[in-house]
Every structure is written in C-alpha cells, then in structure tokens.
Length: 424
Ligand code: LLP
Image (spheres, rainbow, N blue to C red):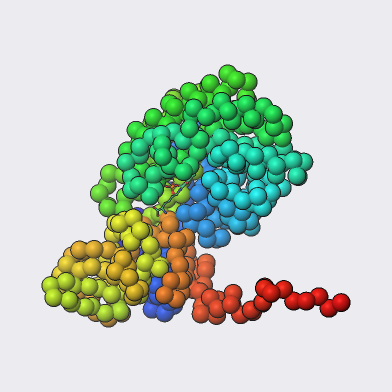
C-alpha cells in the first residue's frame, strides 16, 4: 500500500504527509505516489501477457504533464478527447502512432491537428466521418480510423458514466455499420483499421467486458468478411476501483481473463484505462477550517470543496476520508463539506470520525482520477497544487493557481463591435 497510516500519521511511500502539509503550507493539494502508478501499470502489463496489446491511458482522467511522462516511460500510449489533449500528449513525448483520438464532437481544427500528426481517429457519427474525410483531403494525408460502436450494453453504473447504452450519445449502432462501411469504400484516404467501444466507467462486474468482447469479436469478423483489413480491437476503459474499500473490485487480470479467448487471434487489443491507472495513486489533502453544529447535524468544514473534487457532488460518489494525523476528539457522525456556496458542496456524508481541531489534516482517498482534472475555480477557490512522491523524494509537479493566473485572461479588453473604421 503506497498510502498507509503509521502511528496515526498518513504516509505516502516514505513521506509523512503531515510534515509535507506543514512544510508547504499549501492547502488543499493533490498528492500522488509514483510507486502506486507503476504498480497499476504493471498489473495491466502482467494481465496482458501473451496478448498482442496496448495500454492506451485515458489522459482525461489525469493530465498532469509529469505523470504523463511517467506513464509514457512505463510503455503506455494515450487516448485523447480533444485537440488540446493531443498537444499535451505530444509535449509528454507520446508517439502519435500510440495515440487514439476519441470523441462525439471533434471540431474541424482538432481533426486537422490529428491528421497532421498521423493520430488514429475514432469515427463517432455520420458527420464525424465526413469531417475526418475532409481533414484528410485538405492535408492530402491518409488517416487510420476506428469505428466506435455503440454496443447497447448496460454496465450497471451511475447513468452519467454509462456510455455504451442504446440511448447514449456515443458511437454507432451496429445496424448502421453497413452504411459506414459503404462510405469508407469511397474514401481512399480513410483506412479502417479496427473497431472501438467503451461501455462506461466505474465498472465492477467484468461480465460486461466479456459480453462486449464477444459482440465486438463477431462484428470484427463480419467487417473483415466485407474486405476490410482490421488489425485492432479497442475495448475502451472503465474498470472500477475500490472506492468503498470493500476489497471486491475486479483487477485488470479479471478484466483480461473475461476477454481472453473471446477475440479473433491476430488482432491487437487496445485497452483505455484511466481510473484504474491513476485513481488510487492520488489523494486529496485538506485542512479543517472548523467544526460546526446545526441542531443535531454536525459538519467538518474543510478548505477542500466541490471546486477541488466534484465527484461526490456530481455523481454522489463515495471517497473514503480519514485524518492524516492523530485526532482524538469525541467521535460523531459528520458531513464533510467545503466553503463553496452550494448545498451540493460536500466531500463525504454521514462519516463517523473523531471531532478534529482547527487545522487538522484530512485525506480524501482515491482522488487521482477525475479529481484535479475536473476541478474548477468556482467561487474563486483556486485550483490546488500537485505533488508527486517517489520513495523519499517529493516533487511539486504543479504549483497552485494564483489570483493573478485567474485574472490574466481578463487583463486586456478589446472592442469587437462596432468594428473600427479603417483609416483610409
Ligand atoms: N475511453 C473512453 C472512450 C472514455 O470515454 C473513457 C472515460 C475512458 C476510456 C476511461 O475510462 P476509465 O477507465 O477512467 O473509467 N468523470 C467521471 C468519469 C467519466 C469517464 C468518461 N470516459 C468520474 O469521475 O467518475
């Protein structure tokens, strides 16, 4: 365990987190463990043994540049959902050949960038195909494409993170595939190299991956039968992690075992994990501002909020919360909330914890995925710093946002209309 308590103090690898909090004075901040990140990638690499496969890390889960460089050095590729993520992946040193560009609303400028760099692009709709073909013609360059299939599989997760159901906005229904294949025959610059699907996120029951593998394997065979030389099958990401600390969440091994043997041989499998790579490798560290009682309700008010970590507010997501130092006040049932002016601003509800003193440090676990990535400066709560622990070494891998950073975009005003008269 890269995060563990010793004598009631939280350690990240060899670092006492309270010492770090006191030394930096930064609060809140995100803290990552390099050892945990390596272990998570190794678990996938191990599970993929014997398969021709690629781990295409979903950059959206956590786009910190230093973490991306680490993941690239560990052999991962990158799954992207915007032109800016593509730029970021290039900065981190990922090879375009190891990237996949996904999305249901890719803009023309983003497609031009992908084509220019030779990134594989997912086709998500009729208009997407037309736009990709146009981008290829404009650049006079061939593009490898995948067709994103809507597999109509219910992954039994929060509706906001289910993406492969019949009514989802993502992907193409199987019955429409013939239309796309016909169009692709007339687009010589678009090379169909595989199929893609993504069922959703926080998946705990790996049987849905088995169902997807069977469906996608059959579709691959059918499309090959139409004369297309498919080489890849991309099964997306979505493996859940053990937020509840119940010890029951499936491993990459369970995922790959559900899939292995159900795919046509001679295919390269692509998996796109985000959460199961970075989720438990990161925590959010906050400080107690104060303790409050409203009748029989008790609140711990922290400097972390829905602006720092929105998952509890947005999905009702559970993140385990504890103190990072000895706290021995009377135990009570607390809601742990932030300072943002919204009743939706909470990090945890009904947690039994000892009553803390002002300034006590709190840890919100499993915040490495979709934590910083979804943070905002709502209420002008500035985005936090990020630190990476590697053994005994701590590196600041992003400084905290400042008031000046936020104001910079408003520092120059220009009149757009009415347009200035020309001088002549
Ligand atoms: N591939 C595609 C096409 C995706 O849409 C996603 C995530 C992934 C891979 C990575 O999925 P993962 O392995 O991380 O589950 N904000 C939500 C999660 C949204 C995920 C969207 N797509 C949350 O905080 O739970």
